[in-house]
Image (tube, rainbow, N blue to C red; front, side, top):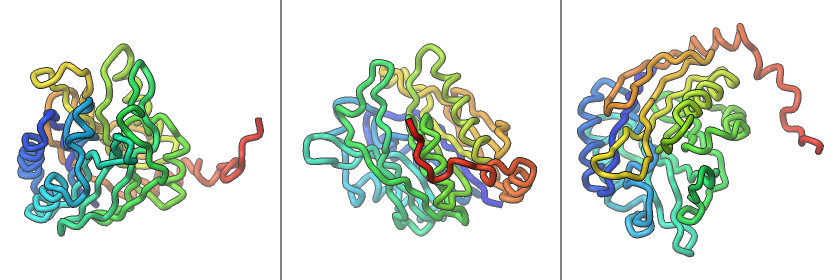
Length: 267
């Protein structure tokens, strides 16, 4: 089994405050093999991201690496990297092993140009699905709006993922929380895949932007929510048992029953 810490923290506009919160959460997560933090852990979304974006050898990710090594715990967290040279950044999920080495950096593919938001004005999209080996698992990385695109999750399955890590700064609004829960459960169930989904805790004290609904969850391969953190900040340790995956796929071999795998859809 692998023990994972779901680290539902409130995110400040200030990177130094967020790095402090990461360190505090890791101290509470002792005993975990992997700690997962939200999308945009570096800083909140907004016009400041271009000025606060850092390369992966910058102070924020370096601080994450030091903290991972100090606690002997792998870390996944959302940051912003300098982007396409046109003033946009990359919205990146960085994966760091327990020795503090960067093992992968996934640049968010699907940008949130929906519900009146325009992420593409600030963020340049990535293009490559990413699976990383951490804490004895092959983890497929999914960032926020990506979870609405089942073809990305299937691509991660085809690359050998045995866990989805979904990180988010989910926008609040009518039905949005329901969308989050439904989509996370759907990606788990349709792929018979353990899914660890971690969102920002609501943070009205530091921002009124509406990003962060909480509801970090662990969902099992049959779509059952094993843990739901609600809206308050918190750190919850959960266990991933790959034998449960094997049993689910024996009972529900839907991945084996795929007919359209690798085939274009004719319009």
